[in-house]
Image 1 (cartoon, rainbow, N blue to C red):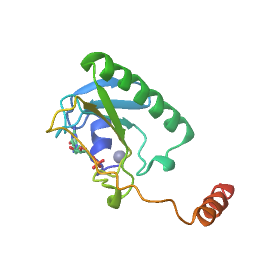
Image 2: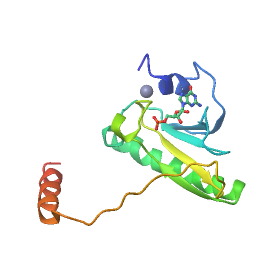
Image 3: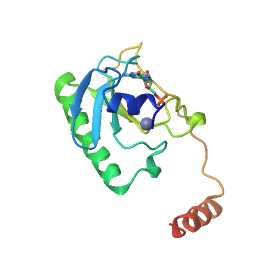
Image 4: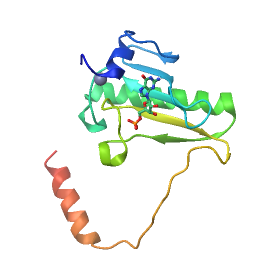
Length: 137
Ligand code: 5GP
Ligand code: ZN
């Protein structure tokens, strides 16, 4: 996709700090890391959201996320979050699928999130709606 910044990074039209590359994926340092060693893993194929990827690109992406995760743990000897935002309300700013791998060392200035848990309600309706959507493929 011509105007997509991550497609441009994948095509090496703009520079990035690449840490891993294979036929279908690329991993590079986030330009504005929320912790040291914050890596983005992207498919070379353009898609906005994770479920819009082809089966091949989806498998390849998860495989690379696993590889980079193992490297982050080994390299920094720390915990980490894997984050994938889909849609602007979910915080997606770059509309090309990407997984953040964010090292967590327990420092105050690092990434954190709120988890506003509530009591599960309407579960029968929710299960029925989701099952119906899933059965449509
Ligand atoms: P999102 O909010 O879409 O999940 O995250 C997009 C991420 O891409 C942000 O963390 C941002 O810092 C990163 N980013 C945006 N533009 C560039 C760029 O040109 N190069 C790199 N390396 N990271 C970028
Ligand atoms: Zn793209």
